[in-house]
Length: 227
Image (cartoon, rainbow, N blue to C red; front, side):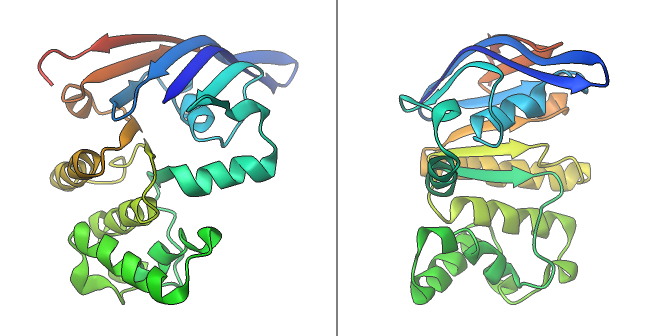
């Protein structure tokens, strides 16, 4: 699925050059579940952005199914994201003026799915995350956990190969965190997804099959025997 070779990412901070990623090599197979951890500013979110085609490396290659995302045109990269990659963020990123169902439907618009099918698939996706009774609710009428469920449904409604999650439980309390993780783990198993998640939460990391730790742009990966 993913094959990263010698990936670097440099930023300018005033007169200084900062290495967000410093020669990362990483392989992630189909159906893998990987948690990414590390200190703030260590490169976690930068790596996730590379995997999602949201940013390009300064050097190195980021291959998804044999295609180097770094070499694609913006149009082709947008198509890859629209068709193959679902995103879930800490801040939900829901459109406040749209209902839960309409928010989920937005993921299908770039794929030119017809209106009737969009509605049906969005309703089914919301039902799969336990929100069948909330289709017509606006984000402000939903709890934080319910909003994150809408965001998960939006990510999965297009049936992606990859699900990328950046601190998806960061704004939730402990009980809601566990609920959301149950939903994500269930979706990972049922859909056969490749699931990659950035989190600062060690309790979540302990349950993951593989954990990648990034410090100062460098990565180490370990297997969790008890996951």
